[in-house]
Amino acid sequence: MVDGKVCNGATHTTSTLKCYICGTISEEFNDLSKRKDVKEESLKFGLSILHARIRFFENLLHLSYKLPLRKWQLRSQSDKDAVKEKKKEIQQKFRNEMGLIVDVPGKSGNSNDENTSRRFFADYELSASVTGIDVNLVFRFKIILEAISSKYKINIETFKEYASETEKLYVQLYQWHPMSPNIHKILRHGAEVISSTLLPIGQLSEEAVEARK
Ligand SMILES: [Zn+2]
Image 1 (cartoon, rainbow, N blue to C red):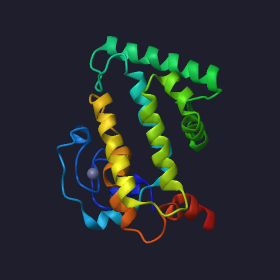
Image 2 (cartoon, rainbow, N blue to C red; image 1 turned 60 degrees about the vertical axis):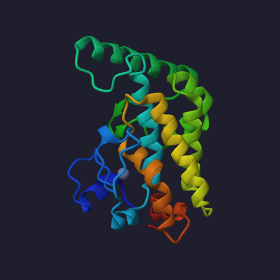
Image 3 (cartoon, helix red, strand yellow; image 1 turned 180 degrees about the horizontal axis):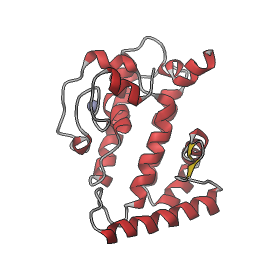
Image 4 (cartoon, rainbow, N blue to C red; image 1 turned 30 degrees about the vertical axis):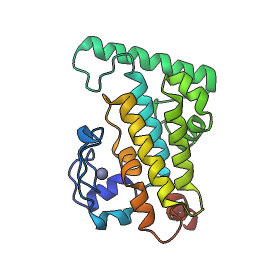
């Protein structure tokens, strides 16, 4: 199982904002009526579980900065300034209320690391209040991330239903902000990817791969 960027390269998908499993582009992710055929061979790349937690966290974070505007693309300077202000305010709250430094570039990359994203989902109620994001959505993301990274066999039908309800909830709440390719992949195709693997999906994660090194 490998990171999304590697999968995009391997399946010749030119834009990273395109789903390498079904070919849908990010602007179409929130249109649930748009369903394209799945490329069977792409299912074997797995779900990039280790990166998924960080990507889910970042998607919610970037969404939260734009909540007052409810706009994905920022064209005017005043919109850009408003988002910058909101970002500062949310970063301050994370620092004060959770002791977390979020979205700050550092020497070894962005501060949005594995530990920060774990803390974010572990304390989902506080995270929802800090960001202003719907608490049910944060909770559902947490459950999905826990399910795919567990070492247990997943009930495919139950997972499929839960993921699909979560996809609908996201769109209902935040239609104006396309979900990230990683979220689309797990909510839309997760059940199929899981059922195409023989081992429990958590055992195929990067963590397992890295543990074997
Ligand atoms: Zn797709």
